[in-house]
Length: 72
Image 1 (cartoon, one colour):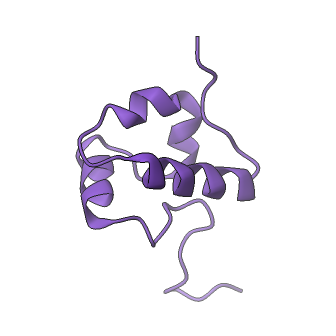
Image 2 (cartoon, one colour; image 1 turned 60 degrees about the vertical axis):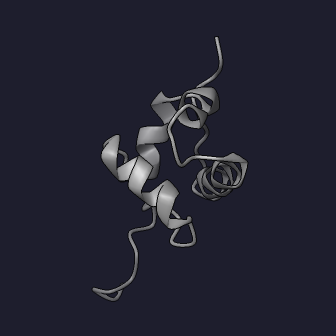
Image 3 (cartoon, rainbow, N blue to C red; image 1 turned 90 degrees about the vertical axis):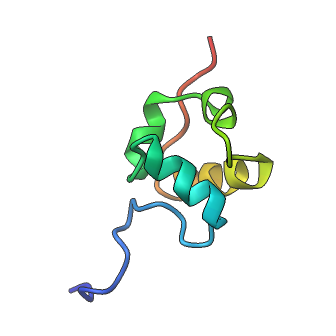
């Protein structure tokens, strides 16, 4: 049984910097599953999302058995 205060297993990494958290929230991203429909390049275009945030998101996706959308 999980604690009511435990993060959802596919929630965004809690260590993301505040600007990255705000950028993702403003764009409507709240779960890791949503990133399977977006490329890393698309995310990098958001103001507040830098290489460190991309790496943290990629690592979280891999840990959940997911990945970013493939670049065309």
